[in-house]
Length: 107
Length: 328
Image (cartoon, rainbow over all chains, first blue to last red; front, side, top):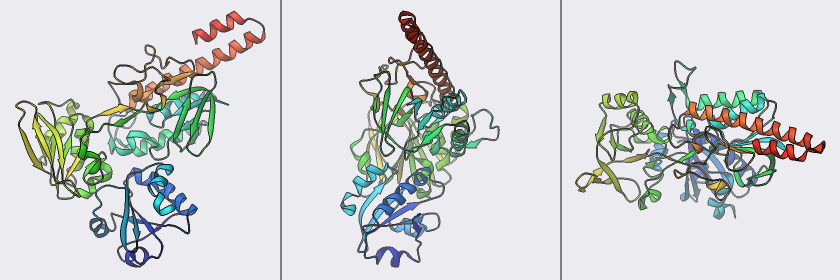
């Protein structure tokens, strides 16, 4: 399973209005570490279907979202809850480290 | 039980795998989960790797390394090593999710990790304008004035790459000359968007939510000043990645794994090291690849000596068996 793509148009409905916490993975084709972390995020999503939704935003195609959320380094993973950013994780990390970072959401 | 366990997936690790696999040793290569491919994954065009006269992108080159290693039977595992025991005749290597591996030999090719400036605000502003990866983050600095710290090839490559996005790139360097290769220097000097800030050391990074500047100390007269920038790319060198083997393998004064002469032999029998983790000086993709070759050949030699010794032992020739192992 691969995390679905969200864009400028669907961001409000899919992320900000979601009942569940949503992790948004800001990424780009040319970012090597993004490609490495993406399958790990897919695994975390598959293992925690009730707790967390995981979506991707391509920063090349959605520069306004990247600017709005002040992305200056990718991969950047932001967890949204009730429309607010509650957590930011920056950089590709092994699964255990990401799970530790997301412990509050995955608990 | 594996013949060869290779830890690391840069040019050294994959080249060792190609040689070991072609020798029929069926190596397993532990590539790491998020850093597979190593340092070249974060570079752009590589112009000095022989065989690619038109240059090749770093990630493309690493994909070819992997393909070639797998073609001859290397098993590549995208997982991280968490623990090692290299002391016994059978080496054990634990991974995050793929279980434990036992091997008769281990080739250690973990490369190096980028060096930090060591400033208090560096971690706080990391991912908020402080970066170690121009190819990942340069995009976000369109039209901005930014700086690169460092004076080597990677600093010049990053600075030149960043001029695609930034309106201006300062190169901050502690000395008044660069240690980068001539071609990289010339390219940076010729670039109108690059301005050199000589004899300057970064002593502080400023900004609340994001980087807004750096404090510079003049290394000649000690004076301090502030330079307003929107991003800081750190390229001041690398340190060998040896945290996994502390206390098990001897290190040199420079912090690299100590090897015997021009070989890859560490202080432990059956444990070999290759690439940047043993090299404080050259640190090139091609020297790492050559070093990986040496490690695979040393491992192969060790394994055949071990096999011969076992045969001798079975025949009751214990003394000769011991002599064989000692010479391997």
